[in-house]
Image (cartoon, rainbow, N blue to C red; front, side, top):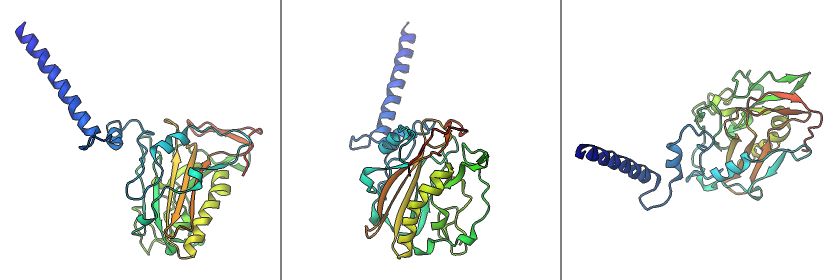
Length: 276
């Protein structure tokens, strides 16, 4: 009996010790809650692994990510909404080196984290250097329905502002065609969201770059749960002089069609109306 009691006590102490070690990892030395440590302990929870705001350059927080993921688009709504009163949460003084920070794909091979670009005038790309795209991001399907294009390979950091950027995110003057087939920079996007809406904000960035401004630009596809097609994308940018500043969320929708975001499949719905 004594041996069994000692064994039970030993097991209990081991469990208590493990709990203390885990708690020490979750809380920092000053006793504050460490959210990043908690995420790293649960890598299978892909959406909750969405990066919280980076200390060095700011950007979309986990709280905002989760709130955006819960939004449902209703027929007749606008194609995009303002976030944070259309004010970027990026830190303009964080611009140091011309580069792009590409986040790794999550456990479902999705681009569910932020890509952040530190851009300047030399990154404006020559449109004649476009190449054929072949990457098939999660949720991708044949991109025409009854003659209508409804799918695009949406770039997080647009081709038009990525001249000289290689797949590691570094500037290389010999790579003037930009980063067009990087799996870390593509997601399945509706043709309407990509061609009609996202281009509005990419044009703002491109215009600022041509005016020789330095710009921090961040794009974050927003996924709900384990769905393979993003519900939308958060775009925000700020120039170092503060003249460019926006923060918006684009719904990943297509007029006349509805998507099953679990797998990306679409079907005709003439009642689906999207206001620009």
